Amino acid sequence: MSFLGNLCHHGVISMEKCKIEEIKAIEILDSRGNPSLKVCIKSCGKIACSSVPSGASTGKHEAFELRDGEKRLRGKGVRKAVQNINEIISQALVGESLTSLREIDKLLISLDGTENKSRLGGNAIVGVSMATARLISTLYEIPLYATIGGVLAKRIPTPLLNVINGGKHAGNSMSFQEFLIIPHGFSKFSDALWSSVEVYQSLREIVKQKYGAVFTSVGDEGGFAPPITDPEVALKLLSEAVSLAGYKVDSDFSFGVDAAASNFYNEKNGKYVVNGRDLSTEELTKLFLELIDSFSVKLIEDPFHEEDFESFSILTSEAKSKNAIIVGDDLLTTNISRLAIALKKKSVSAVLIKLNQIGTVSETFDFSWIAMHSGLKRVVSHRSGETEDSFIADFSVGIGSEGIKTGAPARGERTSKYNRLLEIEDELGNEAIYSGNSLFK
Image 1 (tube, rainbow, N blue to C red):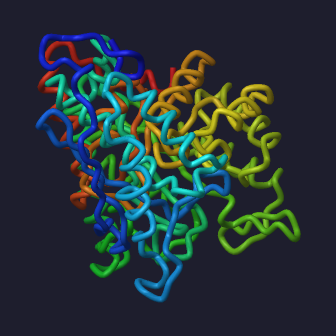
Image 2 (image 1 turned 180 degrees about the vertical axis):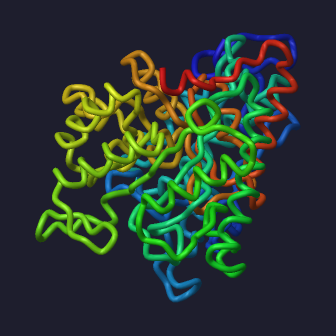
């Protein structure tokens, strides 16, 4: 059973009788101190809520994030989105039966009426969609992950932990946005996570010793931001941290890089600014392949700018022979139309999945389903501006994604997701399956 279709009666509550009674949104803080939304929905005496994240490094094809654009809060207020929920969306959805989230999402999409959800705001729509999914789970008294994926939702994803920050996530001059540790060589998620915590703490010691205590403060996603510009230096630090923690590179941990290349691409000359140098697409491709060969880099995300499907294809083909995967984020923006182009051109071997990029839970589910059945790996992702909501942890287990990316094992908005995955593993007991190496195989 999945909540996306017409739900059957489980004997808990008759869903035909459960209609939406109230929808209410308020303005809250995200992890960067910017405004965001919290949406609560009431039905049959139960209330469920969800909060909406926000990205700093965003693809231009993402669903539109509605901000007020006024002097208050430097234009970043979301009172318009709150008003759209409390007035327009509420008026349209109150009285609707909760038998199918897909039908609710269709109503939201129709009510907005734009391709990129710019009338009501993608942030408003995704908040309502997530809260509806959680309310259905609450009414059925079934865990959210099982409500999404049914009885087959058993896989705990391999975490990709961003422990060195650069790009738009930090105050240093590093072009690449994230350097990730990937604990694939473990049999349980909990073992993988606690080992990653040990590596993270070892990295803190190394950064403090090499660069000073001031650089052990963390960036938006909990990673360190030492004063370095060379990606090879960052990867050497990760290798040192793995060894200091008592683990082995390759067998226990491998590494990932989120280049977020659109952020350092110069459209005028067609070059990428990396480590103070202008690199051509061919030179950047060579650099990525060298990192794969020399530093156990098994995953590279957004290696080129968000319109360059062809260069993605070349690197994906080269990386495949080296057992590394190329992930599309800004290239795809959780958009089925963009995915269709990537599939035709064989641009990626994996996809990043972000709920607020497309704007509804059911559209995100469909994107994941197509990617899975097209042989692509799937990584569910947070945003740099997060909330304490752990929705994506349940979602990743529900869709059976091979990976999840939700920051360093620090800061409450990041650890809430890891803690929820620990809870899910405990709930599933011996039935829990850790993704581990399946992220790459």
